[in-house]
Image (cartoon, helix red, strand yellow):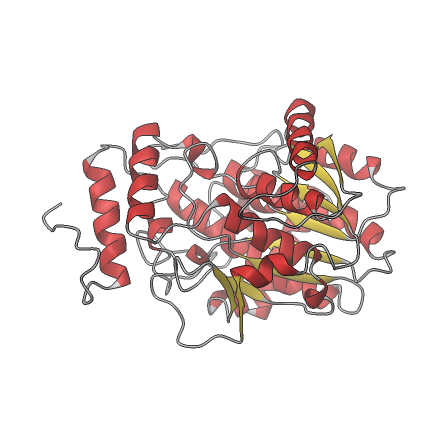
Length: 388
């Protein structure tokens, strides 16, 4: 890669570490993926934070906070499964909403088995009474989302975690499509979740336990972040793709398909949705977003990428100390979903920065994510597309 890794060299900046990491991984694999920018995410940390939540705090209140009924999408692997296991072990009742019933049931069994143990070095605490139940909810199918929401209509629900997500490879030249014809990255990461939140919100609003919605987002939504400034940056423009092409849009901004930008745009949609939902549900439901950090798990979020690249990249990020783990990401998810200290807090972006420090830090999202007119426009167009 032209420069040796000098991990202990004090003048090596975080940005340089990310650059060398990415270059080294690419040298081992000829397939450059859209997840290379994620490797640099949060390398340029904001100068100040409104609030810092260290790893130990993310876990310390899970067994003492009031028991909650929690839906988590994408809970069969990665951060979603890790969070579901922690919540179940902490005595909460968790519904694992996954693409198939078989995946959901298998994940629920893992949660119950974990809760039955006496604890481990990462999370030694336990509270009895936890329950994990699997349910089918395919976010690439609006009919599946509606069927799942209908099955929840008589349930007591306190938290909805919009966690499922996907990204396609850089080599993909044409967009994959959902069952309803949407470009799959935005269709699953944003539109499927948008409809789910719209349908579940009235049920959440009945909760007397400080109901909340949590969105799993990413710093790559921000062109000024270390990951967001590589390649084409996130921007929805005037939403010409959605407004002019309807369900057949390739990109939200109307431009040519780019799988890297599609993922970044979907994460920008998550933050814009969070802000608008926080305003619309004010006084009824709190809405926040968080980042689980850089987790290059070949069996998790990186599962659709080149296996060689994902494996090498995962190893290098761990060696240089910039990686997070599914367990950390899961602890962040569990904290946002259930910790009593989040009661009443809404409209916040909790980023996993500085990189590799195992903490969440609240700070402002990107400039575009703060555009109120864009927040409202995306909501209106999304509602039209999904028939909400």
